[in-house]
Every structure is written in structure tokens, then in C-alpha cells.
Length: 128
Ligand SMILES: [Zn+2]
Image (cartoon, rainbow, N blue to C red):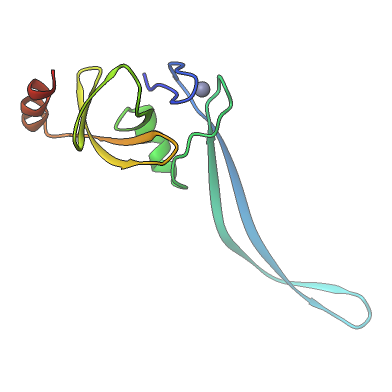
């Protein structure tokens, strides 16, 4: 199960807020009548929260990141998490090998699962 980088809770779900922005275009007549013309969806923004501590998990505005996070293919952890063994741009977490995609100034590591099992085994052995 994925782990919250803030409170450490094991997460079997996330809370997602979706903000939908829509433009409504009207023709407004001098008599005060509003005549609807068209609607135009301007995009959606997703904000993701931990259901335990309600901190915002800084996933990008993309719903596929949410699913990858729950599948532990894309995870975010504190760089000082005692469960991580790290070597340069790679990290071992719970027997799986991850590539370090980004490291933020506030001490969060953004990690992507190394999918190739042979490569992961070789790297993993080196990190044990
Ligand atoms: Zn949390």
C-alpha cells in the first residue's frame, strides 16, 4: 500500500477534489435579457489529499498520477524516510527499485518504479 509522505499512514485510497472550470458565453441585450450562446470547458484541476492527515499530496494535475500513486508506480516520500535505501538517482523501497524523478527543496522525493524486472533485480541487489 502507498504511504503518505507526511503522516506515514498506509493509504488504501486518496481524497481527490476536482475543480471544473467552464466558460458560459451570453449575449446581453439592452433590455437586460441574457441570451445564452455557448459553454466552453476550460479545464479541470485536481487536488489530492491524504485521507488521514488531510495534507495535500503534491501530485501533478493529472488523474493518471493518482492511479499510479495508488498502484505504487509513482510515489512521493520524505527523503529522510528510514525505509528508503538510496544510491544516487535510485532508491530501494519495500523491495522495489525506484528512479528518483525529482527532489524538492522541502525534502520530498518523487520516485518512479523501475518496471524492467531484470534491471530492477540487478540494481536492487546493489542497494541491499
Ligand atoms: Zn497523511
